[in-house]
Length: 337
Ligand code: SAM
Ligand code: SF4
Image (cartoon, rainbow, N blue to C red; front, side, top):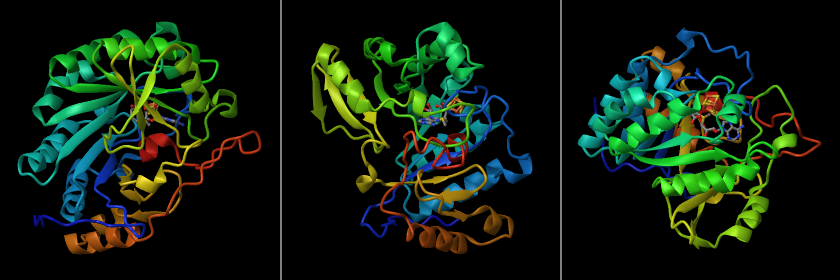
């Protein structure tokens, strides 16, 4: 394998692309109401990149200039033998070719895998958690079990992994509870980010009903807490504040009400080897076909460079009463959040 160091990818808007999100599976052991329908049809196994193909593809991305990789899904930890792939990525961290590997998970498998993750250079993870109420958790995730997730978080913290909680803000579902979740996270030494719902994939229901603009949530929180804007950066699209009363960090991801695209440094590859330059656009490049046709590293690199030369300036998400159908038809679990 030829790994050329010091390469950089600069897109047409002078943004350096050094962050790759890799969706390792479209499957999941939860069925969160805003993410999936209850009866999902998953992709045939043969359409998915094998772990060896994922490893090869990541090595090519790293040789292009990717410095950070986040694994996501679907639920990444339900992919069989994922730890083999993670140990391969860990080798790139050891050799200095990669700065960081992170993971976004629903937490259901953390009890089982947290120690292995820690041993393989995963130092921080995002755990998605929308409520601390067991009954509501079962309703939102349909198939999830809250105590298992909370125990998994403890095991991960014990293994030395720093945790950030991701909470999707859902009007009339968990909005009243968000201050409590923030305090719980901060008391447990975790940062937390709240996320607006994004119109992706056809779910069983109307999204406008539960869309909560975070500007309103921020005003509500300001009645209770002192929020100080801070220039904290994690390589993601969140804007951060520090809450004086808890001493913890709170992030806001507002893809719909605030355009975060100007500093976008990321690209995404799906579990089927499709490269998306933007979460909110349909334009994509197929990497599976060249890989399966035996293309060499340079040819794959050329496909990647050509695709990034088409990275758009921003997304086109809209969610309102007139546009209550998904503006992007693929599910978040396919592209990875
Ligand atoms: N299964 C993992 C998890 O839940 O963390 C990783 C994949 S999940 C698709 C990644 C993130 O996307 C989660 O934090 C989830 O809450 C969020 N998400 C899923 N569908 C969404 C939607 N329509 N709008 C906003 N966030 C969404
Ligand atoms: Fe699964 Fe994550 Fe989607 Fe929930 S948000 S259904 S845990 S992929």
